[in-house]
Image (cartoon, rainbow, N blue to C red; front, side):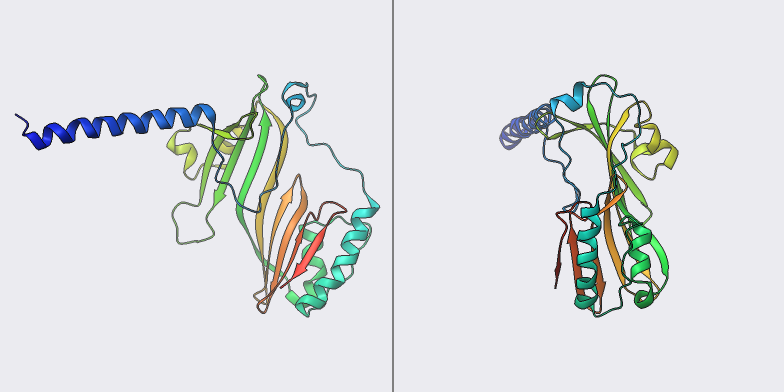
Length: 241
């Protein structure tokens, strides 16, 4: 037998539980704004991206743009002045890549001791025209048992995302092969990843690659920071603080 207090509490709990379930279902149907890193590039897709046929799963290569080199050559000396370090001039023969970044600061920062993954994103289109996203978040704390966590989404036409359920063995510390299988039957549309370069003198460069090219980076030295955005275009802009 329930007392009068229990007779009130039980229906309230049931109503709240049903409300929570209803909100979850509505959220999944309408989608939601994913909790992605602030430095992740903005990938938007048109209806044409969802319908046009693809002949290859490889990302298209971009022809060299002299304006890109001019933007980089202009900002490299500003980096030297901001951080008060020696920066080797970039050459027209190399893209702004991980190797190029580490080369131009090597005289002051020293050799790269380690490279740490922070997160990665891969967007792909299924054979049914849906766009999915594989998001991997890496732990930079070596004491944590969860080295990386994977989330799988459908990207809706609104730009919001909807969860694709994965078994626990695929979300917590999956192998590289298991992660690759998630998008194996699709066509790659875009990729991005964030990594950290740790140098011999204790300095570091955090950078984001978009489709294989450096999109943004932050170089730090003795408490000063040099930040560059849109580094993969002639709109490259940098600041010192």
